[in-house]
Length: 110
Image (cartoon, rainbow, N blue to C red; front, side):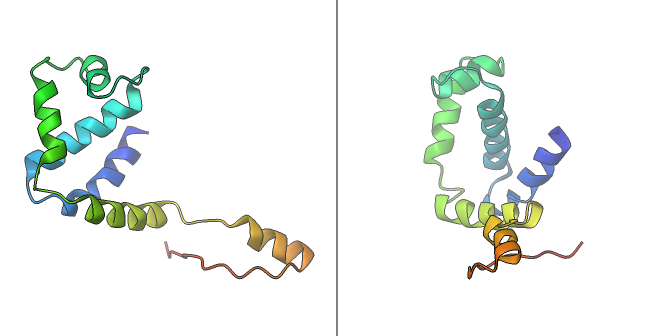
Protein backbone atom coordinates (compact mmCIF):
# COMPACT_ATOMS: atom_id res chain seq x y z
CA UNK A 1 0.00 0.00 0.00
CA UNK A 2 2.81 2.42 0.78
CA UNK A 3 4.24 2.24 -2.78
CA UNK A 4 0.78 3.08 -4.17
CA UNK A 5 0.44 6.08 -1.86
CA UNK A 6 3.98 7.19 -2.67
CA UNK A 7 3.23 7.00 -6.39
CA UNK A 8 0.13 9.15 -5.99
CA UNK A 9 1.98 11.68 -3.85
CA UNK A 10 4.84 11.81 -6.38
CA UNK A 11 2.29 12.86 -8.99
CA UNK A 12 1.54 15.89 -6.81
CA UNK A 13 5.19 17.03 -6.68
CA UNK A 14 4.78 19.63 -9.48
CA UNK A 15 2.44 21.59 -7.19
CA UNK A 16 5.34 22.53 -4.92
CA UNK A 17 8.04 24.99 -5.92
CA UNK A 18 10.34 23.77 -3.14
CA UNK A 19 11.43 20.21 -2.39
CA UNK A 20 11.25 20.83 1.37
CA UNK A 21 7.59 21.87 1.14
CA UNK A 22 6.78 18.70 -0.81
CA UNK A 23 8.59 16.57 1.77
CA UNK A 24 6.58 18.19 4.59
CA UNK A 25 3.42 17.56 2.57
CA UNK A 26 4.27 13.84 2.36
CA UNK A 27 5.00 13.69 6.09
CA UNK A 28 1.72 15.42 6.89
CA UNK A 29 -0.29 13.10 4.62
CA UNK A 30 1.24 9.99 6.18
CA UNK A 31 0.62 11.48 9.62
CA UNK A 32 -3.04 12.03 8.76
CA UNK A 33 -3.29 8.43 7.52
CA UNK A 34 -1.82 6.72 10.59
CA UNK A 35 -3.06 8.88 13.45
CA UNK A 36 -5.72 7.42 15.72
CA UNK A 37 -6.94 10.64 17.25
CA UNK A 38 -8.06 13.94 15.79
CA UNK A 39 -6.10 16.54 17.69
CA UNK A 40 -4.69 18.33 14.65
CA UNK A 41 -0.99 18.83 14.18
CA UNK A 42 -0.34 17.46 17.65
CA UNK A 43 -1.67 14.09 16.47
CA UNK A 44 0.66 14.07 13.47
CA UNK A 45 3.68 14.88 15.61
CA UNK A 46 2.73 12.25 18.20
CA UNK A 47 1.88 9.37 15.86
CA UNK A 48 4.95 9.87 13.66
CA UNK A 49 7.19 10.17 16.72
CA UNK A 50 8.47 13.53 15.50
CA UNK A 51 10.36 15.94 17.69
CA UNK A 52 8.05 18.47 19.37
CA UNK A 53 10.03 21.13 17.48
CA UNK A 54 8.33 19.88 14.30
CA UNK A 55 5.01 21.31 15.46
CA UNK A 56 6.00 24.85 14.44
CA UNK A 57 7.58 23.59 11.21
CA UNK A 58 4.32 21.91 10.22
CA UNK A 59 2.39 25.08 11.07
CA UNK A 60 4.77 26.99 8.80
CA UNK A 61 4.04 24.53 5.98
CA UNK A 62 0.39 25.62 5.92
CA UNK A 63 1.42 29.28 5.53
CA UNK A 64 4.17 28.64 2.97
CA UNK A 65 4.13 30.40 -0.38
CA UNK A 66 5.75 27.43 -2.12
CA UNK A 67 2.38 25.86 -2.89
CA UNK A 68 -1.19 26.96 -3.62
CA UNK A 69 -4.28 25.12 -2.46
CA UNK A 70 -6.16 25.68 -5.73
CA UNK A 71 -3.31 24.19 -7.74
CA UNK A 72 -3.00 21.23 -5.37
CA UNK A 73 -6.73 20.51 -5.47
CA UNK A 74 -6.83 20.65 -9.28
CA UNK A 75 -3.83 18.33 -9.56
CA UNK A 76 -5.30 15.98 -6.95
CA UNK A 77 -8.50 15.67 -9.01
CA UNK A 78 -6.47 14.77 -12.12
CA UNK A 79 -4.29 12.28 -10.22
CA UNK A 80 -7.33 10.63 -8.61
CA UNK A 81 -9.04 10.21 -11.98
CA UNK A 82 -5.85 8.86 -13.54
CA UNK A 83 -5.20 6.28 -10.82
CA UNK A 84 -8.83 5.44 -10.06
CA UNK A 85 -11.17 6.14 -13.01
CA UNK A 86 -14.77 6.55 -12.02
CA UNK A 87 -17.12 3.67 -12.47
CA UNK A 88 -20.53 5.26 -12.46
CA UNK A 89 -23.41 3.26 -11.09
CA UNK A 90 -25.87 5.09 -13.27
CA UNK A 91 -24.10 3.75 -16.39
CA UNK A 92 -24.51 0.20 -15.14
CA UNK A 93 -28.14 0.82 -14.24
CA UNK A 94 -28.70 2.54 -17.57
CA UNK A 95 -27.46 -0.49 -19.45
CA UNK A 96 -29.64 -2.79 -17.37
CA UNK A 97 -32.85 -0.81 -17.22
CA UNK A 98 -32.62 1.68 -20.09
CA UNK A 99 -32.51 4.67 -17.73
CA UNK A 100 -31.58 7.92 -19.41
CA UNK A 101 -28.53 9.08 -17.53
CA UNK A 102 -26.15 11.59 -19.06
CA UNK A 103 -22.87 11.59 -17.17
CA UNK A 104 -19.38 12.60 -18.20
CA UNK A 105 -16.82 9.90 -17.53
CA UNK A 106 -13.06 9.80 -17.64
CA UNK A 107 -11.45 6.88 -19.43
CA UNK A 108 -7.78 6.04 -19.28
CA UNK A 109 -5.77 3.78 -21.49
CA UNK A 110 -3.38 1.36 -19.89
